[in-house]
Length: 204
Image (cartoon, rainbow, N blue to C red; front, side):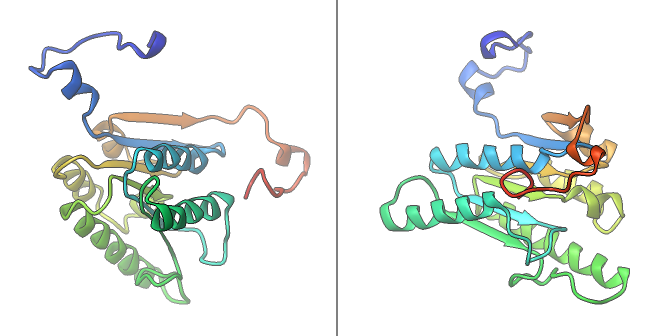
């Protein structure tokens, strides 16, 4: 894809503009770090375009604070105060959402994760956001807590112009097949291989 040019032009009846502006399903998977970071980078671009940004973290604890969260929340406040960019919502387990991870059985967690997905599906149906980041959503799919066929059908039939980014290891093949863009992070080297723990500004 030199200089952003596609290698082939399909005979799909669409104009170049229509094809360029088609909403995408994006999957970031693989064993190495950087999947969520890349998704949040897309969220920054979307905010700059004035899109409504919705971030939904399925696995990270509500106590876990990442730098991207602070930055995007600040941009959300900037939008509220000045109108610049777009609105931002950031939701994660344990912070006002019914899928909050609490003590309980796997069945409890599975039911809560499914309820969380259903809320996102309702938002998709009403076109609540221009860009959804479903962070670490591959795990509920991999564990069988949320039916991947239902997810793919919802994404395929979503109305309007809504981009979806899904991150996490073990992305199901059905999701990969349905996605428009898939990246896989591969580890070559990592400081943890030599006993170095995560550090501020790099891991969070």
